[in-house]
Length: 429
Image (cartoon, rainbow, N blue to C red; front, side, top):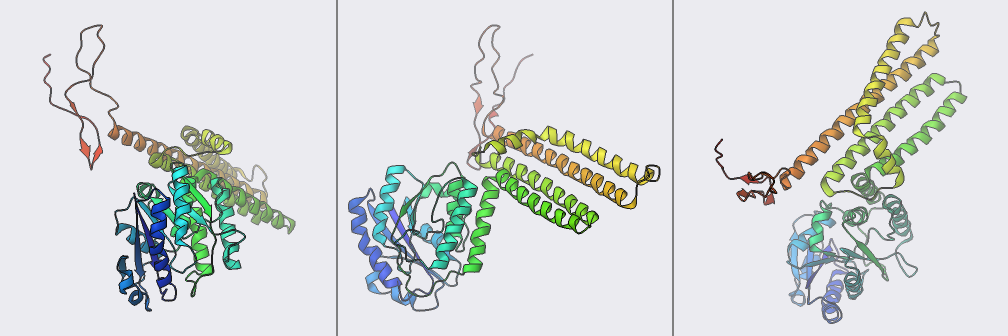
């Protein structure tokens, strides 16, 4: 089995020569101590403007596969281009700044062989790590957030040294082109039950040269990557958590407004918050249905299962419609009969806001139920395209067991099994 080790580089003239030498020297050890029969080193120049390319073009690196970008396209794009330059079954990558030891591929491969993991990464966060403090704090925070979202532990979600099985990449698509390539892969592997990721602690040295990582810019990218992946693979859990946060913030804001004798403003705020919460929950349910359609069922907690049952599409449609009717009736009664009911200005405004909110929330719920039903129907159609839901039977004598029609022929649509097409049969009636 062949392993391709990609070394992406952007202006790494100070470290690239020593990194490639260590990668080439590691080949013998990796082949001798693991199940890998060949290790290919692939260098990708991600638009460097210094002497990086001239150094790699030296004769001592003739055995290195070289890929060059004319302009900077991103860390993730460089790794993917390196993978496309080889037919290896195992695909790895390592930072070109001298912080990681290529010999550690042995440890990663052994763990992969023991666990049959799809991805094995080198964890840099350990007591011996020489990572700068600010980056260490950021990685720890992201790891805690990812653990909260996925329910699994991973100390270093952004590690730039890992090995991946090529067939597993199709389950990770799409992966971004930027520096958030690694946290995106980690998120998907932790959230997708079809994938398995393992981590092996590794010594981490100080980098040679200046880091290309922006603490604020790339930190925000990492954060959005984690949250977006959570919305894709655990939408109900994510939206439920966001709803709890909105509820707490709204309760505090309403209490402060009421304390300052601004009750009407508090009512407006609560109304807007409730509408937002209903919309978030509906979004979570819709995303959950889409996720189920595309990748199958995912792990769900007790609260998520109860919420799925409570917000069944029929309940959403019926309950939402009733809320719309009740809200419209309340607004009509308040507008027409407020004098007869002796409602003051504040009471009338509160009634109108509450009934308006009821109607809007009901409308969101009803339309959400319709969307869920449509998604379910599309899912059933997709299943029907992959199998014959109503197999045609040949006419049989009374009392005989029906047998499959021998004239059925399976057709392909874009290489996928589709609806079975039946050859023309004439029946005499």
